[in-house]
Image (cartoon, rainbow, N blue to C red):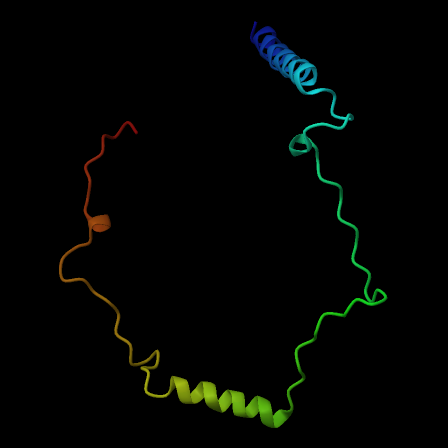
Length: 110
């Protein structure tokens, strides 16, 4: 009996899909004809040519020398100076329990 019910539901789903397609094709025309372009699938994008004639290649980031990299590291370290380190930070402990920490009585049959 269950198999029959599943088959009936599948047939109803397929039938409604077929009917919807027939109605939209009758109303808007078949998908192959020119018509409402908003219902058509967009054409696949063509792969970009690496160096097409007249097209500029994407710019690469500049290569940094060793001195420039060290200067960047020193600048970043200077920004971090004065901020507490992981050892100096204290764990947050609330003075009263947070709402998510409150115990809730739930029935045992859940």
